[in-house]
Amino acid sequence: MQKTTKTQNRKTLNRKAKALKKVTDSEELYFTYQKFHGSFIAVISNLKDRQTHAYGKTKLIAGKNALDNFRIKYGTF
Image (cartoon, rainbow, N blue to C red; front, side, top):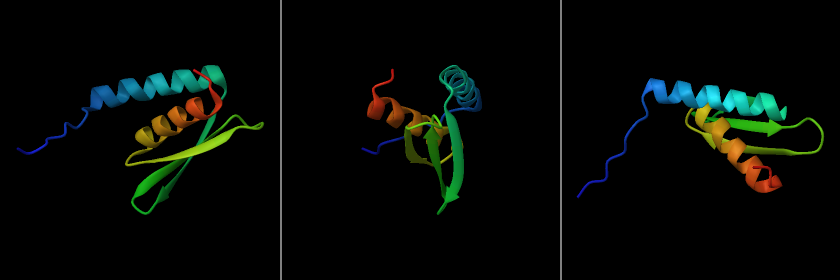
């Protein structure tokens, strides 16, 4: 039995991108992206004392992963 993975369609990705932008605007978090060996690395910071990073296949996935890591690391939900 083969495992199949579903790819997210463009509407879902756009909705998630808008939600991510809304969250980051309200919390004043800043993202920087860099292409790194075929994937993206996202660094999230509040420009004071908190910073973390994450990798992803696209900028959106890397940003979401970085936001999840930031929330877990600093307990901001």
